[in-house]
Length: 363
Ligand SMILES: Nc1ncnc2c1ncn2[C@@H]1O[C@H](COP(=O)(O)OP(=O)(O)OP(=O)(O)O)[C@@H](O)[C@H]1O
View (spheres, rainbow, N blue to C red):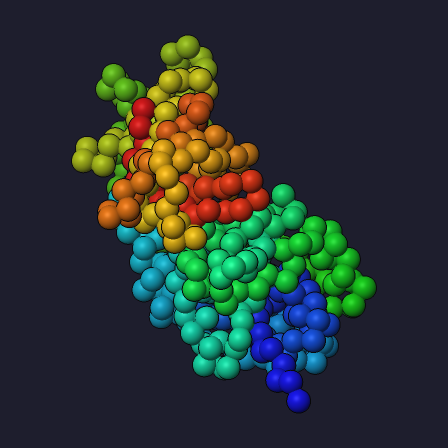
């Protein structure tokens, strides 16, 4: 008798991973659902969404007829994702914890756990696709351009992708919902989760202030003129317009934007006007370079890139420093509000080539 291929699926209690479970089961895999508890999220009102989510996982697994487990990764999540997140904010940068969570937790701790459970593959409900051709594992964009999550998966390597399945990556989101509704899955009508997993719907500023001391200081123009006070550099992102509280009518009357942070003097630099040149950059330097195929191409290498999740692809040329694991990216057109700490992610058409963490911008 043929042994069934065993797939251990990360189930968050949302509709995407619920439908992933259903599809894998229908395709004849032996499916095991696993809920990860990464965060002690009893919130201010004593309301814990992890418990509700775990309960939804249980209901869906019972409906589909697959076993499920809960695993606790609070400690590795704290050490490998949350500490990184805080360190980056301490440095005045704007990190992307989802990229780190995918690399370290979902395709690290969770993958190891799944292998202990005898998995041949792991699966998640990400909107992404993977193919395995001639021993090369390629990450491809999800078909639903509006939901594509390859940006957050850019730090995965060949080994991690060789074990990965994305059962809904070929489907548009409305189709995923429709499948859930037709099957009467308990999560069919559940609202999509938003925001960073551990912050959820909470107020970001309040959340962060619980972990890092806020250090208020001055807002200054590039010429050093004081325009107001800031609540702490960590609360602001480059290019930000909202929440500066600089009265209209000052200067040219145009809105003000964050154009820089001076960590040494604790100054937030603000400029006036949406088109101010200091909001734009010509290139960037990135660290933590991950080139998914493992084989760096000839350089300068032309491809497209995204510097934040919700952004159309931009033409770039890339030069690599393989021994340092860094790269320098030159933009075809000046780009606005490229932000240190965020990821730069490279594409060749539908294929996600890899990425890095933006370290410096080049003006
Ligand atoms: N707590 C968790 N336990 C197990 N797997 C998880 C958990 N959180 C996320 N995942 C896995 O990672 C995938 C992507 O997570 P993400 O939070 O980006 O998506 P999502 O929109 O919340 O997905 P879903 O609709 O399945 O909740 C999920 O579909 C699921 O497979």
